[in-house]
Structure formats: structure tokens, C-alpha cells
Image 1 (cartoon, rainbow, N blue to C red):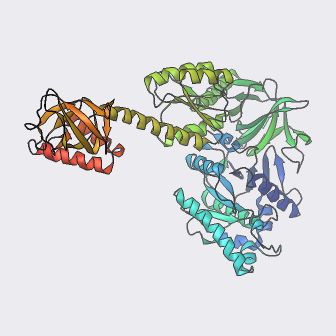
Image 2 (cartoon, rainbow, N blue to C red):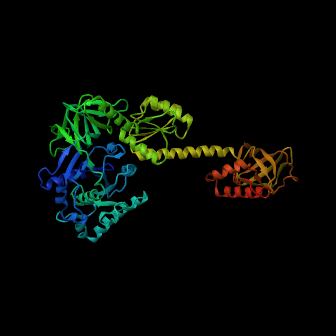
Image 3 (spheres, one colour):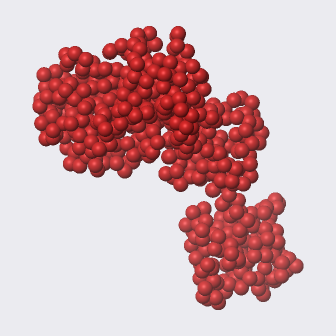
Length: 595
């Protein structure tokens, strides 16, 4: 067993400075003057503990521990959603994350999405409050550490800095997280540490490295134990076309070792992909990872934890986020590796004709997993999950699910497209697909859809019930005494419709609404404040009813129970009349409407 470096990933809203921060960390490390202080593999920068010690200097005295972690491995993948591909079975590949937030802008949609994914995958994180250099009149003294520098600033500038910092703290409180400036944190297990930084000047980077190292030393020592010599376990970060090499994999190996000529088994949607490793390539030292022109060097083997570019024939159908395993050429080992990767993929990509639930789709397996995890947290059932844009097969599944359950007959997509011909089919068949390039916004849109659908169904049901209504027979407006009696009425509270039963003030049902006229127009519903001529069978004015009487809708007991459950759709005065009707009814039957 050996101790590996701490895997650190950086995420946050686009343009808040993720890449600039990593570039500055690398530049700071290089500027420390240590030969070979930073080594880069694909998407990874390794920072040894000796280099961190040199950059942080006396700041590390605060840790008060003997540092045994070998250093940090920062994972850099392009694209805001790339973090979701940093996965291994049972959780995230990253031990800890840096959430980059512009201190001047605060939370943005992808900030919230990043936090949701971190929480769902149980990845601890710290916050780099970036762009402090843009605070008006900010000054940076390169000879001073962050807190010493801040203490020498003009009080007005300090006040502006504190204001922005605590606006950020308040935003965390809104999502039920406790955050605090790193030097004021009392318990790192309960508070999120905020480190003010500038990716432009490098201010705050020693403090950032100190906090990362301190947390790793305290909490991750046991989880960093790995096998260095066994078969490789890893995850694909990117599938890239490279000139002269064809399709290649940029992968992270988090356990074991991978050698040229090893058999590599790759998880897939259908059958696992089995290839022979032709070449392992690492960029030249200090080369820029995203630069396609970077010069690569061939290596015979790599050991965890590291990133590497893998060249092999047959990688065309490989997908980012998929698990990889190395093994020998023995058939039983290949079968075991196949079963292992497909079992892992099967936890994410599923299809069931029996299960009721929403249909989910995403462009990468990591994105699909994140969408699945966040939906499960909200107890939203999933019937199937798959990769890629919406297909005709998805539409058939959607239609069948909608017929079973309107609420779950929805496709929820992350970062996917709907082809034009399928869009037309969806419109014609009135089928619902909700997509967004921010996961939590897909879920928010679905929750709003469910809320609206629930409301519409309830309102439709409400329209069929006898609603609470109190109305007065107007004096001097008897148009006909009986067969049917026709009188002028004013709706005091609520609404009444044709066919509704009517009771008197003693709770006795006396008649029904036969018909109503407003002026010369026949109407089926009369709302509060309206005056209408109402026709009623079976009553005579001067006997069962009189001018000046107050009458009520005679609500059936079942309708009353349903109305109680739907009271949010009733006005306060309607609810009061509902209570009044119940009180009248309970004089004759004390348990009326108690169900």
C-alpha cells in the first residue's frame, strides 16, 4: 500500500476564474524555483508537499501537524459540467473541491448547481472567493500574506471587502450552509471555509494551498491509501481526436498501474469495449494541458494517482465518465473486468418497463449520474436513464408513461438536444420534455410543471364540487312565486352554479338552482357580488323562502371533505362560509364532515 496525493478539482460558474486560478497556482508553483516542482499529466497537475511547504512558509505553523500527505493533484477538465465525469464507483473521484465564486458577483446558476452536485456526491469543498483585486482601490503587497495585507488597507476598503464577503456568507445561509472566512472557521466539519483570492495577482494562493493541505492531512489520511502495483482502475475524463493518434482517452488512474500492451476494459452502454493499450502518453513538463500542439512523451507505465493519454485501436465509441480497468489477456480476467465495469454502468444507465417514473437523459454518464442523484434526493422516481439526444424510441416510452401517470410522463434532460422532427411530434402529441444546460434548473422547471399540473387538476375537480356560497333574496324582486319560483338574488360570498343544492339557515335542503339569468343572458355560474334572477323548483315565495332570507349552498359531505383538502384554492371569506355551513350541519349531526 502507498499514500497517494490528494485529488483536488475546481468548479464553479463560467467566467468566475476556474482556469485562471489553476493557471496561477501552477505559475506560483513554478515561480517557487524548485526543479521539477510541478509535473503534469493529462488534465492533472501534481504539486509535491515540499513545494507547498515552500510557498506557504510560516502559514503552515497554524496546522500544528506533521505533514505526511505527499501533496496535491489538481484535476483540470474543460467545461463547467466536466466535474460530473470525475466519478468512480460509490462517489466522486475528487477528495476535495475548490468552488470558485467571484466575490463581486456572488452566486450564479452554475454556482448553485456545483454546490448541489458536491452535496449529492458528498464531496467536501472550500470556496475561493476570487477577483478581490477588482474591489475598488484594492492594493496588493507581494511581500505580505493575505491577512497581513488586508489589515494594512484603508478602513473604507476593508469595509467594502467585508461587505462583499458577508454577502457571500448570506447566500450560503439561504441554501442552509454555514460559511465563514477561513481564519474565523471554528469547525471545518460544520463550516465552509472561504479563502479570498486573486487569480490575477496570486494573492491568497498560499492560504488556499495551506487550507487544502491542512484539511487533507486531518480528514483524508486513511482514504489516500492505494495499491500502486495491481491492475489499474480509472475513469475517462475526455475522449479526444489527436492528429496522428486517432481517438484517444484522457483518463485518470486512481488505483494500481497501467502498462503498454495491457488489456483495457472500458464500460459502455451496450457491450464493454476491450482494447490493447498501444501507447501511454504524458505531456512534456509544464506543457499546457488544453493545447493540442503540446508535445507528448511516451511512457511504458503509469502509477496511481495520475492522469494519462491512452492510445489504442477501437476507442471510437468510448464515452467520457466511463470506468476503465486493466487486466492481462486471460479470458477469466477479461470477463471479471467486463462484469465489474458493466455493473457500475448499470447503476447509472437503466431501463425498466415496469417502473413508473420520469425518463432522464444527459450528454455524459457523469451528467446522467448527477441528474439521477439530485432527483433521488428529492424522492422523484426514475423509470429509465440513457445518454444522448431525444430519440423516437424515447418519445414512445414517454407516451406510454404519460398514459400511466401524467406527473411522471416527462423527459428530463441535461445538456441534450431535441431534433426538429421529434420536436414536431412532441407538440402534436402534447408530450412534455424539459431540458436545460444547468441540472438544478431542469429539476426546478419540472417541479414548477408538477405544481402547475397539480393546480390545474385540483381546479378542474373543484369546478365539479358544490362550492361554499351564501346569498340573499332581494326584497321587491320576486318575478314568479312558484313552478318555478324566480327571484332576484345577490351572491354575498362564494359562488354557485346551475344544479347546486340549496339549504336554509336551519340546514335543511329545500331546492336546487334550476337556472340563472344576468340581465337577459343565461348564466351557469354566479360569483360573489353578482345579482342574478334565480329559478328554483319545489319552493314557493312566502312559504319555504321569503324576500330578505339568507340561503346557502347545501354542500354534500364528500364535497365538504374534498374542499377542506383544497382550501388553498378558496378565499378566506369562502373558508369562513364553509365553516358556517359546517356549524349549521353539525347542529343536527355533530360528526358531519369530520372525515
